Length: 334
Ligand code: UT7
Image (cartoon, rainbow, N blue to C red; front, side, top):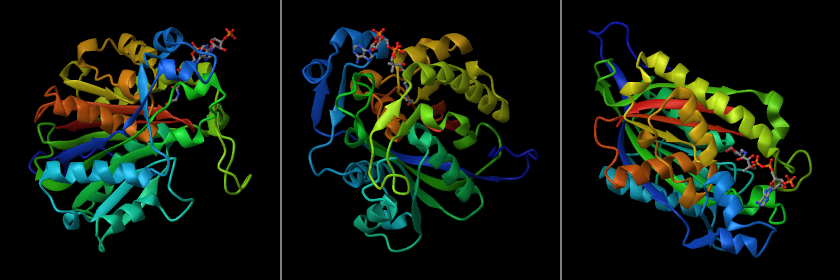
């Protein structure tokens, strides 16, 4: 999915970021709150995961509600009207309904009657898969102005009696508005410069939901072999970061900011050690948000843009790994 052009005289369509927005539900659940529900402690959760608190959607507050807030904030940030958008891709594993795609509900609520909207399901890697898909549709001329959203209500699929999983996840949403623009084909262009997606279904049952339409006709609860996921995470994330940098022909030192999926601070530290990344270049929000699955990368990105760390023309590397297993990365110039 590299958009780099070998002929430097030719122009290339680039998916350029125009706006960003995010939303967290009002209710904050601390580690101490969780210790009242399951046999855990603030100390254990902080030490093993780096998580201090997470946000939980209100009763009746759905994934599309969270996504709408994030989308409207991203559109306002871009200075664009909803009807300028001709494609919406929503990354989620917690849709409002089994079908239709939650993205179509967002399309209708934004008053958009043209173009297309669909969901992508790659669990915690969903936003990276959605961004790579958006980029492909944009550089082939099928879409001009695109909303890419990651939104989740994982609180609805947690087993609140399983201390091994319920302490890890939170709810939230983040969105980007991208517009197709002509670039030079060089890495100095703004927009998405390279990307890669991967999966390995042999690990299907290491992180999954034990229900489904075709199997049990129930929604099910999240099940995870935590240490197994942990073991693969650092290896997969490190390799995808290196491969994506190689596609673009850049070195790790040239990257200004790493915005990883926020699953566990120890995974982020392990990856940083393995790739010798400067810790001060890594954006960390897992302490405040927990693991919000497909929403975690755009939520972290929004924090680092709003607090002034990520500036126009900075080189940013996004990455994620999740159930499937799936993993992927996107390199972009902000
Ligand atoms: O987006 C990708 C999704 N997931 C991930 O990236 C998660 C990857 N995995 C992890 O982050 C870690 O494996 C966990 C944080 C889930 C668990 O940490 P760990 O260091 O791998 O712990 P463990 O599962 O090996 O459990 C160690 C002990 C066990 O007790 P015993 O058997 O040693 O007595 C667990 O029962 O910790 C216990 N434990 C807890 N204790 C207090 C597990 N969860 C908790 C808890 N509070 N919440």
